[in-house]
Structures are given as structure tokens and as C-alpha cells.
Length: 355
Image (cartoon, rainbow, N blue to C red; front, side, top):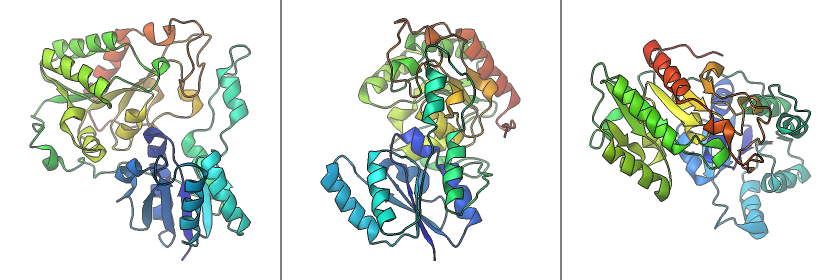
């Protein structure tokens, strides 16, 4: 049996984007054994994805830290006798790992990150504002190079009715008839990717004021974020800090699968909601959907952004604003977000995503 190794470390959202493609690969090549090497958190996405998919967690901060750790990890991988290696990351760690396989004569392919096109997209002058290949396209190309062309029809990690909500009932009340559940993930790793918290609070308050049947679930990570969400949830009726109540990412994915819509930044939560077939109103500032990181099968019309000559200024949103005012986020009208959320809720959870 052929045994393919797929390498993808990085942040949670980036790893989540591999799921639709790995799922397609597993289904179209049922005799192919697939091992996905990633950080331990990715187990929530990949553990039960398909019978021929195995997950291998690598703690790069402790057990496999530094060059000695990578050497240890490489020996562990070499022992599994892979017949091919797909590097979905192309960073120093993955390059070193795949190089060892290359020396052993194992076929290797790595992702094309289109670095030149990214530089043109984010240039301050002579910007070239056109869509780059998506991450999904790039992963498909890697697999094609190894002799595994795929076409993905992935829909969700869960059945059409959503994940098993019974595991959440002790902490979250079941959805009542006519209720509209809206998820709000207001934070991001970088300021250039985050809508001002004060404005987002007004968005939530307006959604609640306009519809007595709306229920809001907040999502965040880290104690500082959770504390802000706690304070807001205590102050505003019909708001629940879901991340405080739920124990793990798998539980958050279950709740997301029962939402009518998620509001998120260009962040991991956009991708998590996408993996459970929930429409996302995504808010973009320093970054841009053209960079290829839009959520799986999400509609461009649900991407909230404004036209500025400086946008996008960053692929990952980690650069400081050269204007110093973060106008790309601050000037987004709260009403635009509210209108898009209401439109999706009116269409219903079964609305057709563009492909």
C-alpha cells in the first residue's frame, strides 16, 4: 500500500484549510494511506476525517524543538517508510524534513506560495490587485505533482443537520423554534485584521435590538479575550460567551455547525465555520481575499471590506499600519455588517454557497 506524508504546521486556520483537500484525496484514493503531520491541535480536524487518514502530532516547542528535535522527528518519520511526501507548508522545518526524504529517493513535492505575486498584491506603489491561486488550489497542485490529482466536493465535518449537539446540552440550551443563532468571533492575531471591539459591540447590540429571536454566541481565545467577552455577555442579554463554556475545539465546531451565520475576521474562526458548512460574514482590513485565504466555499459578497489604495498592505496582517490609523478597519460601516448578517439569516442555513 502506498503511504503519503502530508506536512503542514502553522496556525490553526492554515491547517484547517487543508481539510477539504485531504478529505477529497482520502475518498478518491481509498487504498492510499495518508499520514498528516501537524501541531497537536489539528487532531480535532483530522482524527476522524476518513478511515485511511492518520494524524501525527508534533510538539515543536518541546519534544521536537530546534535542530536536534527536528533530527529526532525526521528519524521517526523515516521509520514509517513513506512512498511520497507532500509539503503543504514550505518553511525551514518542513524543508529540512522533506530534504531527508529526497536524499532517500522518496518523491517529494512542495507548495508554491507565489511569493512574487504576493509582493505585487501588497506593494505600496504599482500594486497589482488581482486574485492569487487559493491555498486550496496550491494544495491540489502539490498532490497533482505526486500523481494524485483530486477534485474536492467536501461539504462539512458533520452530517447535514450538524454535529451532535447532545454533548453540549449541559452547558448550552438547545435551539428553540424560530430562533436565529449568530456567532461572533471579534478578535484576530493582529490589529490590522481586527474590527474595533467597540464597533463590534454596537453591531451585536443592534442585531439583538432588531430581532427578539436572535441569540448571539461569542468565540475567542486567550484569557484577555475571554475576559472581554465575559464582561460583554454579562451586560447584554441573549449573549453567551461560548468559548468560556466549551472545553475544546471539537465542541466549538459542533456549536458552529448549528449557527445560522458566523461573523469573523480573516482568522481561524472563519475557517472553522467553513468546515462545518456555516456561512461566514468575514471582515477584511490589512489583508484581502485576493491573497487566497478565503474560507472554503464562502461567497465573496459576504466579505466586508472597503476600497483603499493601500489595501492590502500585508498577506498575514502582521505589518503595522503605515498610515497609523488602521482606516481599512475603522472606516467599515457597522450597518454594512448588520445588513449582510440579516440577509444570510433571511436566506436560511441551507443557502447555496458558490463554488
